[in-house]
Length: 391
Ligand code: APR
Ligand code: PHB
Image 1 (cartoon, rainbow, N blue to C red):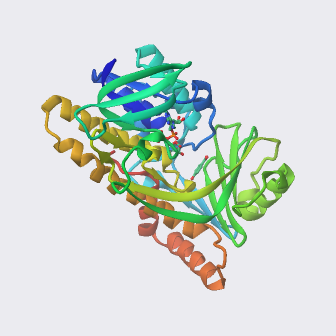
Image 2 (cartoon, rainbow, N blue to C red):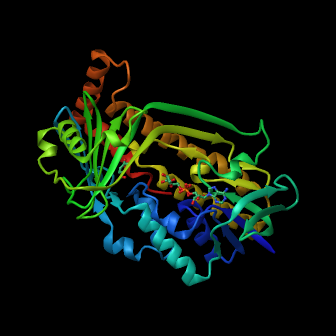
Image 3 (cartoon, rainbow, N blue to C red):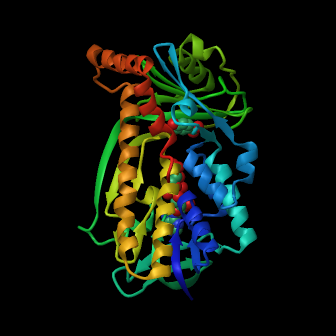
């Protein structure tokens, strides 16, 4: 078998790239190690930037998103109980964010792939990449015990942080810059109405809390906690008590308690791997970079990367020449580093760091007061939060 582009991984990066290339007539295959049910069932983030929504609409996979996504024109920050609403839309010329779970996005892109004949192969075992620095690459995998392979012009490594693509590059070519944060987020999902119509990010002496949602009847809440936290030590009652305490009376007034049906722990990390190209291989999305969830950038960066990568590949097929392909990485990385910066700043503003003292806490409060008192500071926050106007 031969294709122009083999895409490894059917997460948001792989599937959006697949749709972008497929509609332009590029011959491709998407290879995913898990099942569709597994990929669609993974609980992940849920805030879409304006540009991400535009991309999904533009691809014709935004119908349910338009009907069911919750458009948020603002977001609130709370510090020791004081609540500041940032009017994202007013500060950015009308750009808000849309709350629509990654699981919903995955369902939409998989349904459209089936309808359009975009080939996605699930259950690919032991995917291996060969010839990345040669004239053509070969991708091998196993399926139901049989060996399969495809020869291609390019491989798009969209296989997430633990994928095979980045690991297939010879040692010494890539550099990964990393920052581990000394805490994690404990998250729950519960079928109760959200505390407020918009998200609330709360900074409290004892740590961060976030009130988010998936719909008008499903809430998503997070608490900062130590890395060695055991989920079984956090029964629902303890979680709700701590959440309300950290949100403060005003923000907690709207919390509706109920049984959680999902509880999980995620450490906060930031990594960026450079460069994004090795011969015939391009890295995109979580395969290339991870951001802490504070800025809600993970899925948005994945989509922004593959928009750029698709444009570069289409320019190559239309005009020949490697210029656009070489420009993909540097352009994508500029955006990635801006998201890493924002996520790092926002995490620092809102979380309690081990060893932090009264000086640190007062600086956090001062930063909050600067935001509260300055339209310019709010505008900078809003611009970073909703993402660039041009993808
Ligand atoms: N072979 C084939 N597929 C693989 C392999 C492999 N060796 N390793 C991983 N995969 C698949 C995973 O099963 C997953 O479905 O690659 C996909 C990668 O998807 P994501 O991890 O969702 O990464 P990405 O598409 O870059 O999207 C980033 O998703 O991970 C979240 O929070 C993150 O929102 C961000 C976004
Ligand atoms: C979520 O709803 O899961 C969510 C929202 C905002 C974030 C992170 C996660 O910053």
